[in-house]
Image (cartoon, rainbow, N blue to C red; front, side, top):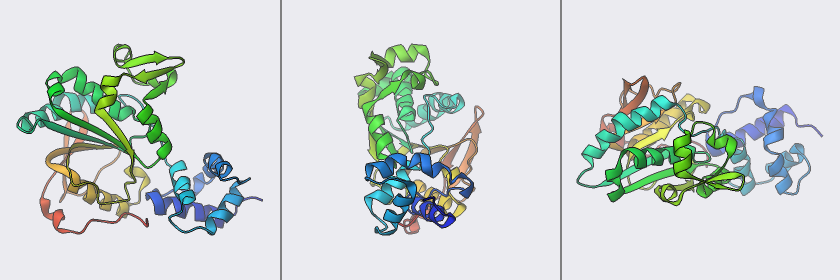
Length: 287
């Protein structure tokens, strides 16, 4: 039995409720391939049977969560967009390091980290260009809504095609160890990065603030109202002198919260005005 338009609309509503990801109906065909493992793991035989089962479950059921996770985009690579990491290395991290000399603590967040390449890239920059930070408390946090990709990030094991995408040979030999047909992140780099499952819809986060937040190529999947509420929440956990980095095609368009700065052909954002702290924490979606 084939799924109806109403079935696909129901699946899209589940994804939006759990992740704020607004799927285009023109891409409904993706449900069949991306959810195949989900319905098979649940002992079901088809997408239509999965829909029928989902309709009988509460909104916060594990199966509905699994559907939302399976439909998230997990595109990533090492040093994705060299301009951004050149900016971080040459301008943003030096500025933060100068300001944190007394505290000797640095906190970076790779939000929507997928399989972890972005977080490990930050770790490589720290180890390669900031040797003084070896004596600091450096925390690189990677989070993603998908438990599957978080598990892969925690393992730090990548196939050849993944390390060939963006990772220079000199770094491959220094920060990866060959293990069979895969490459394993070396222990020193792995210790810098911690990964956990986190839904950007579920706030508040822990009270600690981050010095740099990378949330790249995520908001383009959200409707405008969700983007605004997410940015308000990011403003709360970003240090007042910290930096926010979005995807090259993403703009916050919130001048009361963030000031855009163009440097080295890459854009970043400085938080401005603590006025939003007077507002309640914004809820992104129905969780």
